[in-house]
Length: 118
Length: 115
Image (cartoon, rainbow over all chains, first blue to last red; front, side):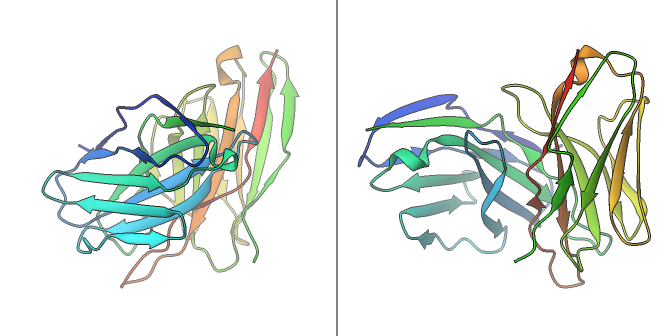
């Protein structure tokens, strides 16, 4: 069974601080995808990154970086020099297996609410 | 770039009424998903369609039904609405291939309020 755990329910930081959002997952599949989505107060779900299980390279995109550790089944997300606009709920999600008939549905973690204070 | 279009953005219905939510996926995307997000909750998967056929079913109540049409748009029909159906309903779409599937891209959601 698939499961995504985001242990941090809420995090509050002061602007310009770095912050790391934790994500731990469970799956029996050897091929799977991990995702991060951002949900700002306006409500939409914004895709941030997807990583497949065979690619353990860390990724950096501007102030965002992701650390995928297959050994510990973690896919953590770090925001460097946080800004007020980063305030949102961040969801980690898992989609297991690769098949021809469409992606398997995403299983989401409970989300982490990040508040960045000016 | 074109995104997933959902309509309406907001909907207010009374208990026991019916509601229809519409979703227009990104062009050339072959899979559509419906998710329900209650207040302060994570999105819960309801149902998905691949090439107009139902592909996966999640926690969709029997009062709800959905379909994907020949133009790939999808509709979620909700009957005998209950107060607990008040939520944000997301549609997402993705593209599949033998090599790799695209990420799910979500629409802006329909906020349903049942009074």
